[in-house]
Length: 402
Image 1 (cartoon, helix red, strand yellow):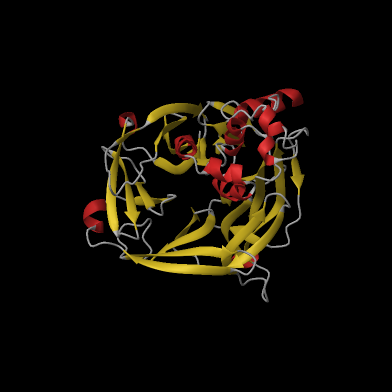
Image 2 (cartoon, rainbow, N blue to C red):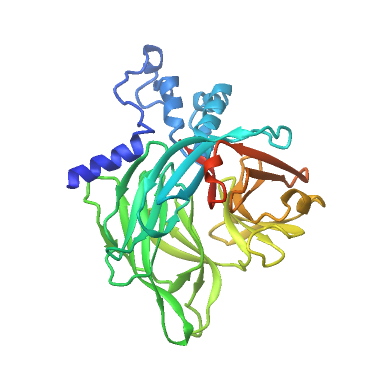
């Protein structure tokens, strides 16, 4: 079973993104510069390697050598980066979680042409309370509850290939378990962080039984207990950026056990250590802004951004010093005319800096709204090809790696 699980995991991830072959020999002209030189690697293999890396790592690789810098600047390399990154749509129907993908529109405020969504895969979960993690390096965790067996199930899924792997049960007698999904770009390992939610006297909420499951490597897939020195209670889904998992939480480590502070938990995937950044959060959403953690806040307490007059974007510039930069954007006057009475979800921020919104429920037509804060423009882009999922809840994700 162990070998089968490891083989399934490799197929799950590498079935779509095969690691570059190491059997090639460097060309004679490059080999003469020495096997340890960056130039000893053929250009086509350099491109193949770079395309496997996160965007932030690709930017850092420009410092490796002049050859790598010039390679990254090649027009067809940029096109390859854009081609590998897609919009991903997930929606539930008849006990299945179905996935669609489409290309990400370029310069949407200049071109609002409709884009077509193509069917990718579906996963049957035969249960209730299904939840999705945000995509992490091409993979998603699907969580649901089986009424028949009263079990909570977690499956790691590859929407592009349709492959999935059921994870071992979390070691706990409690029912209320929350889990987060992350990736360590240094060791190239996926990890799942799980903890049991508790509510004690004085209405204090906290967690226990902090556990980690490492995906990859040669060890058997099993949960390991880890220490957590920060009594806290998660308040949001997680977002993984450059090897750090972030989620909103209330923390109890201060003068009174029954007083809490609100902020962000930073879980370092590689070291498995917890840190806390105090920050006013509500109402807000955690986003990836150009490879940095960002908080998008609005000025009233509606469910999603729809009636607000302004947005505040706080970007974590220095994680160790807890330094933030803050910008406030006043929405255009035609905002309410464009969104009408639709309840919107905040999808994320594009590489070009546009803030993207989508309807929480699909109506007659699914669409995205791109807000360019620099130009103060709004663009509505229609999504075609998902007519069968009208009036379903649709989850939209940016920059999904195919």
